[in-house]
Image 1 (cartoon, rainbow, N blue to C red):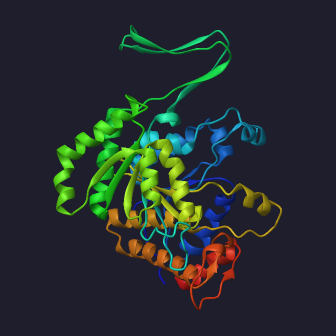
Image 2 (image 1 turned 180 degrees about the vertical axis):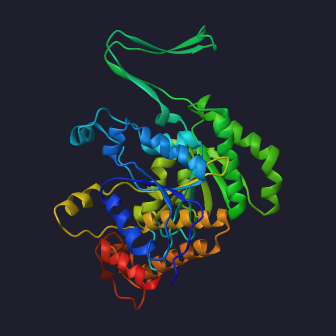
Image 3 (image 1 turned 90 degrees about the horizontal axis):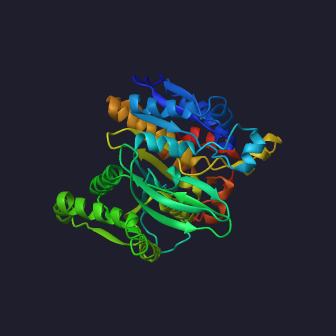
Length: 401
């Protein structure tokens, strides 16, 4: 076939470890044989982030604002052990956190459903979509160690630096730690509208939970903003399609989700969404079976897999050993970006190819050609299971394109 042409490039953000290896294979085996791939490339591998003092991450986010659509490979957020392993200049912040702060978007995560993959929660019959606020909280926190005998205060100043008020956080008789987090009314408002719009477009109820009984100012502000915007702008639209918005405590939402059939948009603050999206992905089958897209208020999109860099498999790969690594979420990051690029550019062929690749991927799984993580979950009458290594799985998909 003649290769499909692209008019506008994607922003391509390369990553780390085993997902970086899969990234290249996916392009070589599943995309470039069919698409004249046009990207603006940014290497967000940890070594290059360290080399550029993390400026490369900021540049990739700014490019996303320029071109409108990005696709990102999983990346390492370094801890102390990684600093030593990679001989880093410092413990760089999460690249995802940096990109989300610049784009100020909402992360929507949805499980990839394939016939034959049984969720660990038997009652879940429909997908649970996670909406994660992508700004603030501990991801933009200021924190410090506190010595014995020192005190920590929350101090509010005016624009000229004049102190308005202060509150004692704690008097430390022994050593300790302190952290300051923040959020913005504008960001929470944009988050609320993104969630309500997504739910209306996809015919979903909205469940939101925080801890306003304990966090009577911080979390309560989230609750108030969501309620105010819903009542003023969205209630009638939701009632017209027979859907609703519910706010309750985060622990109550967790209990309701576990005994539900699924099929709702579960709205989470930043940290809650980080944790709960992994729980939901695993419960539906595997972390390798969940899509993730960051949507900014002005309509910019960044697609990625919801999982990490698969470190354990990478070390085996470096030894020359075979791995059976699930690449589905990374494939769907590419298809999501290609589909959106095609939609925005009016490139019907590109959008159709992306959907074709998704169908070929699901067909491969449903016919029993799967990676090791899916074997305990797969059961389909009359279908024989074939465990494939990482590259074999991609070639099986290519056969079905």
